[in-house]
Image 1 (cartoon, rainbow, N blue to C red):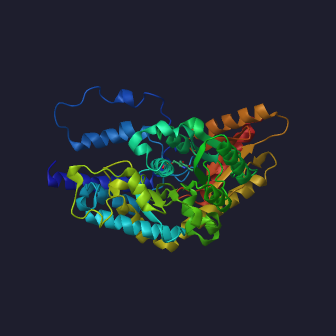
Image 2 (spheres, protein in one colour):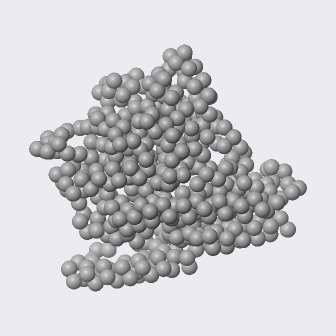
Length: 472
Ligand SMILES: Cc1ncc(COP(=O)(O)O)c(C=O)c1O
């Protein structure tokens, strides 16, 4: 593609992007296609000869768009969000054009140094202590894997990295039974073994019960196991419950355990002074992860991972082949040593663009608004006798179900499952679900970049109408 053609297509594409975002509410939120629909429309063989880019744009509209679920539609209330924003998209365009691979400082000093500075900005914005250092990872799952591997190495005196996992059978990791599955995945692939992940029961508000944690650790020590790490969650995936950090941290300190904190979604709420209570006990944390790519208007992927002791992280991951030896080594941050991948994208540019474009006050305003509309939704739900709220509303997630009189628990579960499918198939909104104490639970997340109270009110009206039609 010649520069002039590139310029023309790029300009057209910007128009396409703006048009898409302006009209995103007109698309069905959840893609209605079935398995294989898209696959079967794509030729089995690649073209022998060059095609004009306009063919691709035509097929984008005709083949691809029907198979897209519109995460940027403000009626997307499912899972946790994967928010974009215009400043973040613009930064992604710059990142693509630069095409820099930022594995070490020398392969783009600006990328390494902007990353270092952005991690300081974020650390201070969320209130982590000043000794913490950060690195951008692709996902919270990768950061949690890094944390578990670092904890494992610290506990084994860095012997498993060298000798293999032969000693790891007795290491134990602890988390609540509401913890995200990425922890189990990390324990599984770190060689610790999923049998050695101890899931601690939760209290009524779905937060980890520290007394039960203490009992499990004491009993494991008696039985010859080696407690290694606790993962506490600020904002669990199901209900956004907040584990009691200080009490958990004290137990970790007494028993010399690594404390990793997963704040993938709720970490963004820490930019609000009224949510700083979640970090009470912060001085006891060893590692901490949160995802600007969820709630902080920064395109997927962008995960912020912080550690109290960067040297231990680096010792766990460092490997130094000849071709990566540089004269600046030791004087700068070579982020390839701070996690699993060697190659790294220039993700710091997205954070720079988002934080400067909104300003920290602008970010706080939007996050506060999302939290306020969740509270208003929970009031609307509480006002209806045939609905019930199933978990405390902490940030921007409301867990509820339809509970008409005259049905048993199994029938109510069935009704709510049908309700969920009917709503999602309508294309007008998208909800996801969880199961709490055996109850099929609808989750509504009011955290999409452009969601407003009006969207929530309209969605709620549709939920009530659809639910009652099931019961008539
Ligand atoms: C609490 C929590 N931790 C971790 C993750 C995994 O995030 P990622 O997709 O960045 O790996 C999620 C995903 O929703 C989550 O809710």
